[in-house]
Image (cartoon, rainbow, N blue to C red; front, side, top):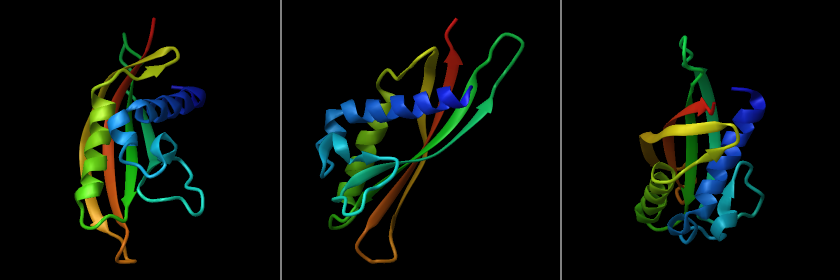
Length: 139
């Protein structure tokens, strides 16, 4: 997977989340509440595209990649309810929809792990979701 394709994959994941109305309805800025760099003064709640790691799964007949991708959700709602609804909508949006990447096919996107915590400020809640993707080049 070239670095250019790696970027296109992130853009495709971002676009898929922006298109998922059940998720964007929960974010303060709607579809504009998905970031890979959070602007100062951003309204809560929002989502941040986090780390991505790609590993080749090359065999004699395949040139696939396994990709780990992390999303972070931030909320200042009372309790964890708002945060967990956002996390659920993220998982639903990524696992139940086509993710189009030029020249590649995402054959699997599954949530592997998630956790929540109260940040040290005592007000902000953060959710972390890790997804596993299998990406193959189209022939």
